Length: 72
Image 1 (cartoon, rainbow, N blue to C red):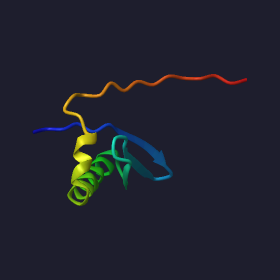
Image 2 (cartoon, rainbow, N blue to C red):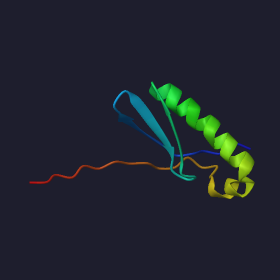
Image 3 (cartoon, rainbow, N blue to C red):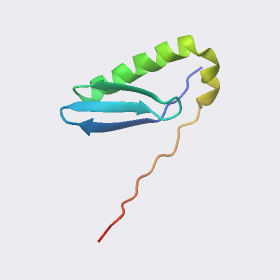
Image 4 (spheres, helix red, strand yellow):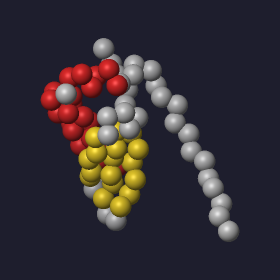
């Protein structure tokens, strides 16, 4: 069975920080690809220790959008 995780990646200095929204797991890497690979590994390890967390994941693709705000 395949599950989907929502990943948010931000850049902090020279590092990319990857965050799994559903589980709150975070990892990092020097590139976007490395950060995402490291996050996948971290999520797999997390789920080994907390198998009940599988119920927080979905098999459907999440809808993720962005919007902008202006101030001043």
